[in-house]
Image 1: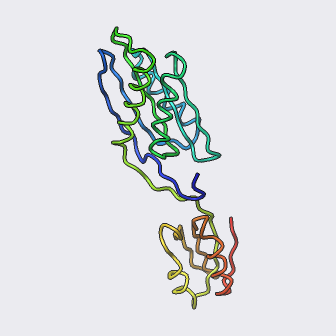
Image 2: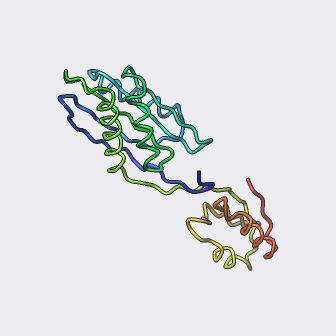
Image 3: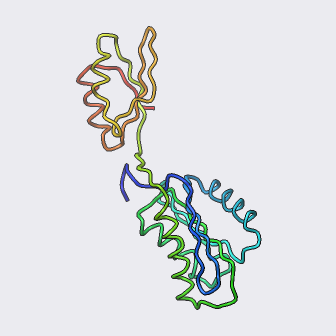
Length: 198
């Protein structure tokens, strides 16, 4: 797993298809907390209350957590294939719900697994992506005669100015990509700029 950079779904996307008279709706969505995912799942279940199954999976960057559910389908035929589609896209902070309306034709375990994985993968394909960086935040006190220096240190997306306040002490709040923290701190020491990590 990457230490400080990963890709995620940026916004919700949906893909619908029919397979052997069953209808499948894949809904890909960004999610950073389990409770947020389950709130979305509940909302989707209410919206599509007439569906036979609401199968799902999610994968979070924080502590590399993932979960999935077959939601009443035969064991291993829905949740794991959906999770496999998320992993195949190398995505984190991403959830997928696949809603199924049973059409009267049994697909068999292999057919069911393929249908769930394909529906999830197609929803993920059309979902916009976001690059995410894991950052540490620094408060840096900058004298007026060093203002130009601090601006030259900025290097988005690796070193990003979050906010600045000018007063008796000028304080810059800066987000630094985790892999760049040592170099950033060394530069601040070299410039004799007072700083602290939040």
